[in-house]
Image (cartoon, rainbow, N blue to C red):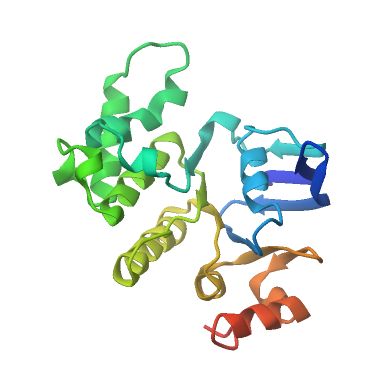
Length: 238
């Protein structure tokens, strides 16, 4: 059964329609990359999946026991977020807020969960450090640990390597791939990185003048997919 099912979504804002009647589903274990040019609705789709913005038409449904509050989210960082004056432990622990419900405090299991995810992401030694003093790569690892505190099933990632140098970018992609491959975490990632989408994704959602959703291999056999693979600098076979 699908974790997420989108049925005939129309996305946009005010009177501007970006995508019409978009339908696709995400199943457990998928690694879906959402790609396309700027202005095609990728970020609007992400906000809609997170229920931060209603669709203009259509529905988003969760299944397979997934509750809307059990979706982990790593947003594209802003300057304000990078300068957040809190400790690493506090930032990661805040990912448990949705689990708290109306409780105004964290339980022991919340703190244990935060500690485990800091360990998983290799930032446990930074727990007492101020978040804004960290490098960009360290900050992204902290935010990924935070997102994991919210979920064991589904991560939504918005340009998770934006602004990172090539070495740190490769390390982030390896972390995300390991979460998908070894821990069974389903990934939905917005990316402008064509090479990474071709290398890591199991499925592609391409938003453009034409919309494509399907397996990576089927996408690479399509006209848009062949052009996309050429932009990535290869033939798509990895």
